[in-house]
Amino acid sequence: MSKRLNLRDFQQNLSNRMQDKSRDGGHLSLLGVQIAAQNYLVEMVDISEVLSLPPLTAVPLTKHWFRGVVNVRGNLFCVADMAAFLYQVDATGDAGNRLLLTAERHSVNAALLVDRVFGLRDSSSWRRDAVDADQYFDEQGVMWRKLDVVGLLAQPDFLQIGI
Image (cartoon, rainbow, N blue to C red; front, side, top):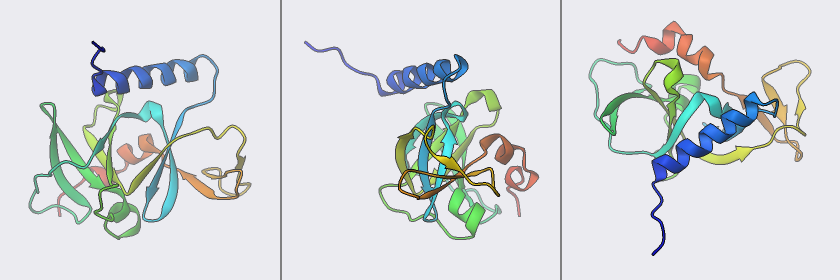
């Protein structure tokens, strides 16, 4: 009989191992995502979990990018459509959409809705843009931007959801 794998425990263990590696002098683990057809890198230490898009509960009188709330194992998370917040266009709404739950250390129960998750990226061999430090180019010359979750969670425009 094979041991059953709990997905949450697996994700938490993987996240802990990556955080330990980055603290031990290794490079940061980055998650590649797509927002409004733009490629972004998110530091894994800022994300606690990646979920498929569950049913959302709408909240009236909120900004257009605030999609509602979602219950994840008894905890409510506010869902922000990152494409709408950053580019004024809605997320694609297809099966590839994912929620990135922010890490507990940020003390904000936010879920960032992204169009697609590409997976972990090793940017150690990428080159950084000389003008914009938050832009990187991979081996194929594709541009990636860094999504600053800490800065996002500190923005008054992001925290004020009411219209």
